[in-house]
Image (tube, rainbow, N blue to C red; front, top):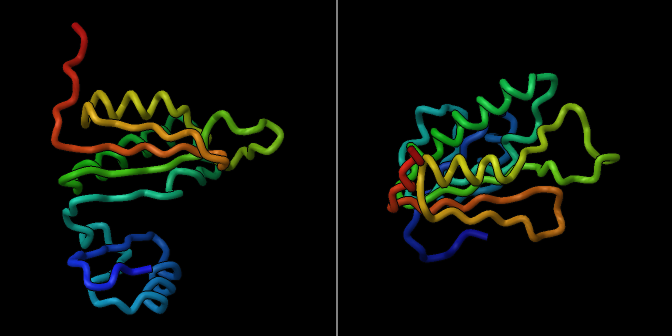
Length: 147
């Protein structure tokens, strides 16, 4: 539900024209804009990436990890106050795991966010989905790397 009377701007991005068209048809608020063009996203106080790291298809895991890390760099680069993302967790039930999906190590991406972006990172892995969420508040320098 859109917050009535609030001053905000929302830009939704997806690589799928079909998804962007559906969002445009559903959301008529003039403060919301949807695009398939990465160069139209711009900077925002907060950015959110939900579900975009899950479907790797047949991509090698090392290549997918590089994609995830570089996309997180982009999230941080277009965020002024913070960003959040979620991923499937490697702690999923093995019989339910699929080869075409990426099950990330939460500690790996927690460390990446702490080391690159901020001292203020929260890892949420306490809800009943087979995923985790990272919340990164910007504005505090990351801890210096150990010598």
